[in-house]
Amino acid sequence: MTKQNYRLGLLEGDGIGAEIVPAAVQVVDAAIEAAGVPAIDWMPLPLGRSAIDDHGTPVPDVTLKTLSELDAWLLGPHDSAAYPEPHRSRLNPSGTIRKRFDLFANIRPAKAIEGANAIVAGTDLVIVRENTQGFYADRNTFAGTGEIMPTPDVAIAHGIITRDAVERIAHTAFDLARRRRNKVTIVHKANVLRLTTGLFRDVCQEVATQYPEVEVDDYHIDAMTVHLLRRADSFDVIVTENMFGDILSDLTGEIAGSLGIAPSINASHDQAMAQAAHGSAPDIAGRNLANPVAMILSSAMLLDWLGARHGDDRLRRAAELVESGVTSAVRAGTSTVDMGGTAGTSEFATAIATAITGAEK
Image 1 (cartoon, one colour):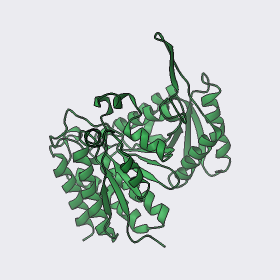
Image 2 (cartoon, one colour):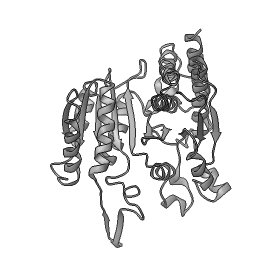
Image 3 (spheres, one colour):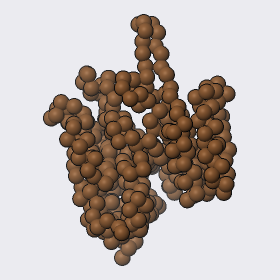
Image 4 (tube, helix red, strand yellow):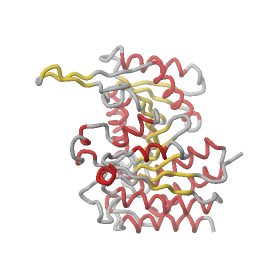
């Protein structure tokens, strides 16, 4: 049976978060009403610089406790580089939440939108990034970090790859490919990092034998950047380790048109967080200039994830309405400056919400 109501957390974060997260809420509210979903209960929670001022930490305990009780949540961008010490040197807010709830899959689509000036027209792929290990020192150990400095002039980092972690991200990628175009590309650097990314490649290929209908190939990370620039439209699902996935998803976001339209979710088997792929853009914060599409499409991904988890086709329909609403608004000529338009953040969000409402009348 489907749930009758959903409780979603709202963490606006820093910079443009105070503009793009409310924009996403406006669009989601329009979509769930059109799809016949009972109203979502939104739960605003403290996070980021304002939380430091009010609670002494960017991710208060009350926030973490409440998140554990919710169905899912929306996370705005954070500007941890501007936090005062010691917070600036600690694990950033998104990393803290990902690690706390073991959100091991970072799923980042890159889909060209008509009118969004894609570098490779027809791009429609998904980066499936392992989110907990690899060479990101703040995520790959239970305690402490994976970086040390034995002397002031020597810095050492270690990367961790485990079979269990690779198996679960590989299954995520292959399950996703079966719902798309049945193709998975494994990205690694096994010619140099033979043991670590070699293990990643080999375990992904082992998992592939359980999905005989899915076509599989693999590329070294450096070659993959060239292939994406030349023929991003020929790829479907790309699975890779943490750092490679972070870099490739920024690249594919721009290839599809702009990081401003690059969505993502971070998920485990039973929890998920919507998070735009871009940063907090403090230079334009508070000026109604930010592109809300990445946050809006991230929210659509979250609705789809919730719909799949709870067997609720209404939520999946709402996700489809959000996506079509974005396309319709852009096609009709409304977009922000980074997409070649003149609309502000709020005007763009209203145009998307209006397109959704109009489509269902």
